[in-house]
Length: 68
Length: 564
Image (cartoon, rainbow over all chains, first blue to last red; front, side):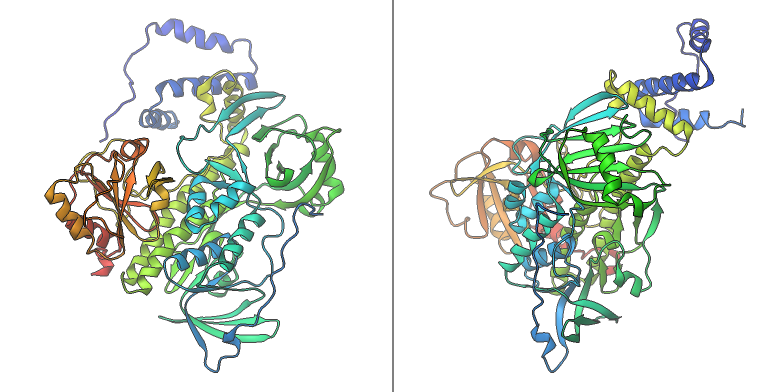
């Protein structure tokens, strides 16, 4: 098995505040605006991670829609 | 409608082959006098192999078609003796702007590395590119270029190919050891042999127009995503020679190509883009559907495919003609040495493997650009548009904006012709990469490193420790190796009292700015071996003549599995 770089263990400095902020930015948006915000968020965070291997792990876990 | 350029007409000339009693035989026949066919004739001649080029037309490209030629292509052209004229006529550019909807998103500078002879890119109409190659052929021995000659029948046998050629004065048949096929994307020869080029057609249409403008737009590549003058589509404006501007307008899959080609339909689109007040004349226009496809094998016995006939890409990234020229330079030296019995025919298979890698890279890049320009579904469009919006203030997003990744030479990193490094080298270069240029002084004159490479193998050695007797012995041994030129690189001027280690096979290269040492990490006693196509095939921190000879044999394919 190849070594995991994506951190799937707790890493938030303040998980509840982040979650509240995440849902809060969508509160007054319609569906299309929300899609745009999510796209921007993905792009910003993906660049912050940068490493392709780590991003591919995230893409892989994210796309397992029925395996949870 | 074309006003800035008049196509030269090349007369049909009766060949001696048509009057010969017996069927005449040639080592190489090339079908197609486009950029790749013409380049192949010149390259083969420079390596001592004569060829016949057959073309069914009597002029160069009608309309501009390819416009953007990369540094690597220009370096190959410099080896052919054609680059100076191309650079002089062409438009050297390095800046560009990307627009999204109503706004400028960002501008860029290619920031090419300084101290190279040739620029990163020039824009030059394909007809000039071809015309200069035709002129070069007229000046050299060994290329028999036959206009208004059309291949109508092909009989490819195991070691010989016969072709029947139609001319205005009737048919004749000739034969060859190797047939090079460069007759374009819709290759007749490929069809006649029942072979396929496989890939995808993009469900989109593009209007490509060349216009002459009096207005002075800057010499920059301008690319618009979803501009107000052409909603939901893309547009490109780029300058060529003679004040001709290339305009690409995405039309969508539903556009009617016959209608869109008509001037009265083109004009309003261009007026919307350029502004009502801008005067322009339409030079040439066509509507295209783009394809990315290639053949599974470019080598079929002794029939070898090149250029668009072998591999075709969409134009974003300028990888069509540039990729084609890289295929030509890869093939010419190999074929010449096979014909001279200095390499085994199996070396030809590495033309296929190395250029399959190049073609795959080009297809991947141009497919990604096409997918960015034409998003495949709603969410892709959202990601595309948000990438463009973020790009205005967030530099990271500019790395994702893809209106074409401009052509760079393929690095044949896994080629079986490479010899692995004996120790670590600093810097960007690797075996399998094309040589990088640097200033140098040869015989007291300012010159360039790349001018010293090519057409034969070249060993480049830093001889700043030349006094060592062991190094002298190695140099003596190197001179015994056939098809090898030796460059003695030094941080010192050429000694006036150079002894017998120096003769016509050795050339003193004064590293004027220290950039050869820097770019190649070529420390005293280090050595590089370049193939005749200027690709690095091996390098050593501690070289011996025997190691160089062994690496040269490997580059000639003598250790390939099928060569055993």
